[in-house]
Image (cartoon, rainbow, N blue to C red; front, side, top):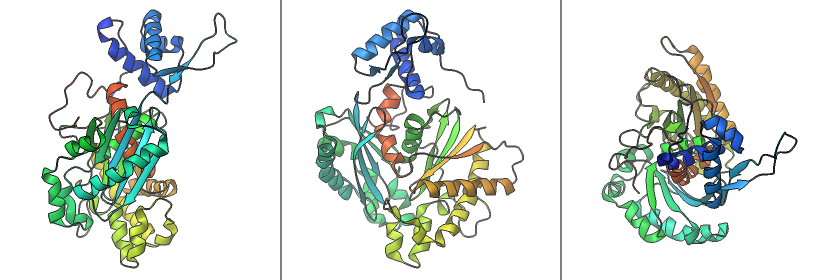
Length: 401
């Protein structure tokens, strides 16, 4: 699959797209001069000057120090204004709630996290009501300064209750619960709801280091495994907003359970540890937890998860010839690297006839990927170029806004 370089248009009727393109490139590059932007986009110098001026007036761009020592007038690079917008991201996890206030460049200004046995509509709203005022206070912001309240959560929570020891009757309440409406009442902000795996993938794409690959798979190993798919440099949500929901993917040669979620999920490790120490198992989801305490179960789980992920990688590559594979999860960076090495080791021994295996890389945000990606929703839809959704109306029910 070949990837096309992003180009602009000198037609004034698509100026909004050109503005997105310039903001997109500056986000990727860090800073750009007008001359650099002209070269990258194919837009005329005059069009670039007009758009730069407009974006600066709208407080989206800031001037950097002039570049001197060249022929002619000093060039003035432009960079994103971190304070251009503020967003709240809310991650509803099967074991945790995470609330964060994030600026335009992805810095978390304040955050609140809580661990629970399972999420219900009642304890979800209780957490938001209790935590939101303290979050705003800690960040030194008022509710009027917040542009949106964005939620990342697993879809169809009621369908998986038995897999994470949650009462089926209590989880069934989610089926008809109007989360968006209830949060709008409490936050008085525009609310979006997206899949948590897609959100974590979005965080990597928007706030992570520049990724050369325009098409890649992203796995996120949380309480359950999920993830996202990147096509043409943008998150591809799919028809129902659940593309990259890798949990049901079948993996062979595993006695008693043949789904990826049955092996490459933290709930599996939790159950292994609980056989020895239930209190220790519950502590897995605490940031700062000493993962040495869950050896030897951790080593057993990493081998099992790495092998299953290797099979999943080959299956995904058989459908689309991805340029890269990224693995992240709700654990420290060193655990993530161990898991990546396990995937690499097992890939070497599996039959890869008919597929070309790309590099396997570790993600960069670990615990915070989901909440950062939730906050980033408007950045990607309003201030960046996404060739998967640009000028298209999303299917009903895909994203609630």
